[in-house]
Length: 238
Image (cartoon, rainbow, N blue to C red; front, side, top):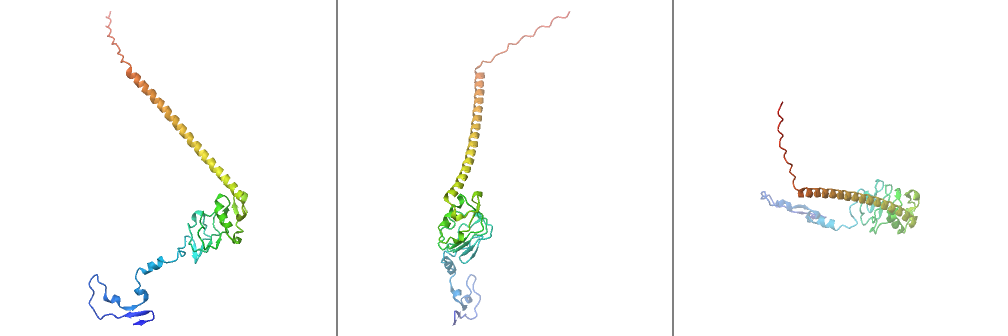
């Protein structure tokens, strides 16, 4: 009997219990739906054919359709998701503790239309180059005009999108100078320790050489015998 999207398969009359390991005859009768006759591997095929853009929502963000909301979570660069779903159209990163964006974070998102970046303490130094370059490629710069530098002190309050190259390069040079000075100090300490170790080895070698010469000299010298003095006779008593 077929009714709409369901149908019924007639069941046989009373039968004895099935043998162990055999399916029950009644398992193939009764009301049927399209889902009841679908093979078990069909859900797996359906899952594999899902569009690539419908990927799982990246933790710890919240997702609504193609909008990924990572705002107000206290995120830093290290806590950001490594990637976003390819079909993402909007990303909310506002009101976090971001001082820069990881290199390549927004690359490859061809459907992306907007990124909310306000309310973050942006540090305008070498690490901000990626975000600044991404902003310059955007046709709609209106939402990003109010992004300002929070540090370093000489750039605090400056509009991020309008920073000049030489201003960022000056901060990079200062950072590189500090790194170079630290590396130079570490190298100097390392060389000093190596020199002290070499001096200690040389002193020990000289000491061992002196001991070896003394041992060879003692082995070449003949043994000296001490003559025995005969006992003197006692003087006779008066």
